[in-house]
Image (cartoon, rainbow, N blue to C red):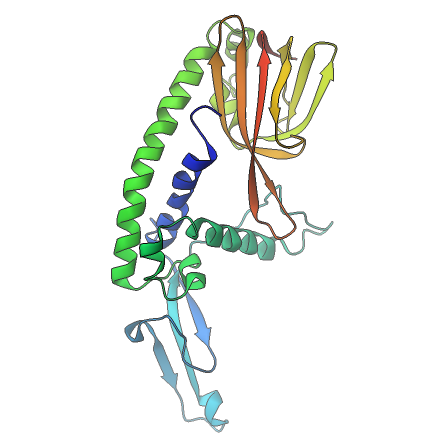
Length: 268
């Protein structure tokens, strides 16, 4: 990738922490503390319920706090499920939680030193003064990063003009640009036939790169998720750059560069 690098991605991903701390939909969920005092939580944010029922003392007292409900539950292609779809909610939650922890590690040390418990931050909680510092920092970083992302996308779409696929987009009302084609797409398989490269996507579309050559392949692209793409025109050829995502057994995302040089691009 020439522009949308792994380093830039770190700033783009910070937006997920921003949304967790300041969600658009103000929905909350209770977090229950059955015993002990929760560390890292401001006293004013803890509510305690005391009752006088015929129960043990510990059963007559419960503390809780409200956290923003920011976990998104969906069928994630990287979260393998059984035949009945069991554990989908659990795997979605774990995937979001561990990757928020990964993203939090990219915050500067002067901010991280203020965070009393990074686990709570991954769930969307921070004391007000710490929360403001984090939101201010993320707002500055993501404003620049999204500007770079926007300009890169515009350049790639402009570069599409002249390729066979640009004319074919007019025949596909639901897939009218590379942006739509690659948006949230998973590469099912990549195969070579003579000098052409076939890239099959999970949307049941296959694109062909004519007279293709692999310039970089940090990972076998089969069954990876397309995070970013760039299209560049060189002297006599084009280059298609991908920033791909894979997940390990602990649901942590890893990012990989793949780059192809070719003369034309078309739908099969």
